[in-house]
Each structure stands twice: as structure tokens, then as C-alpha cells.
Length: 78
Image 1: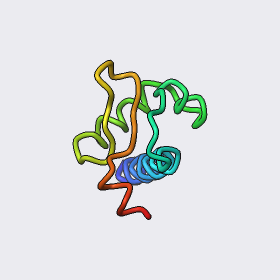
Image 2: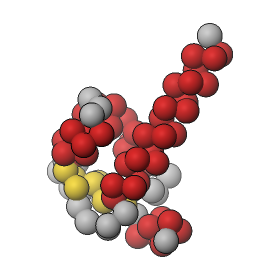
Image 3: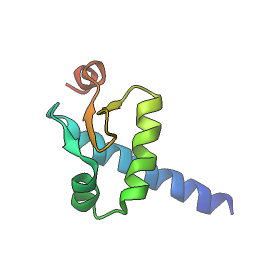
């Protein structure tokens, strides 16, 4: 059981890395489009983004349909 959770955690960490890579341009991106690019269910991407919002990695627009990387975090990646 522990092996399953560690594997799942590894997948989520990789997905966070893929998402931040797509957002590195600093522009707004539609969440639905990100999900399509990553071939993942939109709900899973939204869950990953919620985590990222909680840690100031990304910001959502007022409608909750678009996301962009947090400027301070983007500078850390450069």
C-alpha cells in the first residue's frame, strides 16, 4: 500500500513540474487547454492547481478558468 502512495505522489510531483513548465511564459492559460496538452482529466489538473495556489506557485483568474505562474516563483525558475 505504501508503494502505491509513493508512486502516486511521484506522479503528482511530475505533473506539477509539467504544469509549471507550460506556465513559464508568464501568460494566462485556460485550465481546460492545459488538461488537453497534458492528456489529463481537467479535475486532476484543477486539484494540482489548487495545491499550487496554496503555495503561491500559480494564480487563478477571477473566473477560476485561467491560470498563470506566480511572478516570484517564475523568477526562481529562471
